[in-house]
Image 1 (cartoon, rainbow, N blue to C red):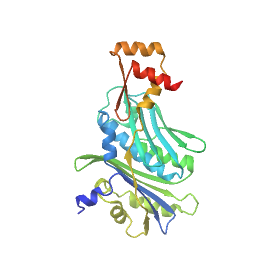
Image 2: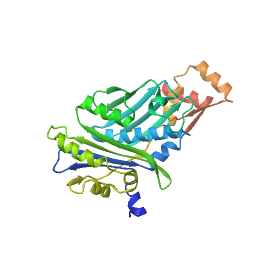
Image 3: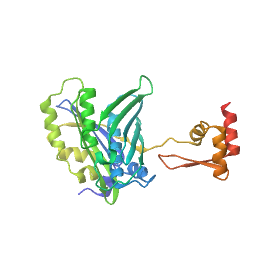
Image 4: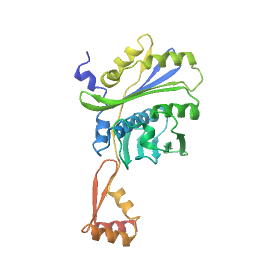
Length: 293
């Protein structure tokens, strides 16, 4: 049985791996503290928490498939009680998430009932080069199936995603695996099908509670798997007083004065992602204006 030390060593880690004798690559990620830090910023309904966990895992796996410096945003927009669900992650596996809820969402509400009429938008923004955006219809029952369809349509690559959310030892956890046929054309459908059939047998407690090496051995003990060093994953918002102040200066002077009068001389700019408050009084706003001149 895996002891506590073994279990925690791969928390908030992402691993890449290759099958030596089959032209298929894989990734595995587990979010523990990263997921908890995200949930602690808001009181989201359980169904929204689970969806954000799935989207966070998917974003980590997506960023790992791309060889560039930059970030990816996975975003759902709809006209249902869940108006927006957004996850942003970068090549350093720094990730943040937020949702906007406008209506009642029950615990077992389906994706389509939460979103209503909506779309899934993936935006890839490299630090150098052109920005790319793909719009995907939400015509599948789950986000996982929609993303698998995205890979087939946009990259013509057979891809399997396994994403699970839940609790392990009383704490929230989200984890997942990605298998993808190599883009150089050397992979065969037979090899891919064989490995995905094995991956589909994975249990929640294995994804949530085993170190990556042990998990891969249980699934693929007859295969030779090259496991690469882990990359740390962490919640990172990136907000700052300077950014909040710059956003505040987009408002007209008249409106700023009205808000100051209404809120006893102080404007509270709260970050939607992490919940941090930035307060600005008249003096601070005038100082901001002078530095922007």
